Image: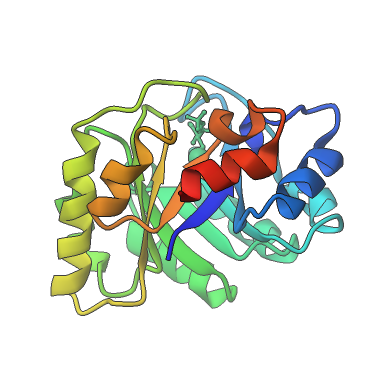
Length: 215
Ligand code: DX5
Ligand code: ZN
């Protein structure tokens, strides 16, 4: 079952509530929210107060992708803002186990994200209790980049890791450069949650863009 989550990063930031309404009507399955701090990645987006304000305008599942240092300091506020999924980067968490527990204790689903060059084996110890593995198929920080082909094999590695851990409930999400051309490679390898920024918000007809990805 394929889930498409448009990334708000590619929306018109001067009309966010309208943009979200448009993709919700257009068949989006969740909303992907890229929080960047200008330190973990060389770009800055928005913080939790914006997420909280948007929560009042949509019923879509909120999927927060934290590209920040010290993600543990954001968890309580994200829970209060009504976020359902929180994904932290393995590379940003020397205490990954603790942060994942913190997310779960707040009643949210926990995910771990991997940069393109970080192997899936780094998640082996936490594989049994992750709700999501996020495979980055571009280097995080910016929308509209080219899909990196070697990350397809990592989707397969993630599927194998979860299977070996007996974790059948967890989902594999892929983020970066997802288009109608690249999506088939990652879904064939086992991904079911697909983030698409420019491929959805970059097109005038968002319903058609989402339908094209699902097809
Ligand atoms: C990149 C972000 C992505 C980005 C994807 O750092 O994590 O979510 O918005 O944008 P596209 O789909 O345009 O590559
Ligand atoms: Zn993202």
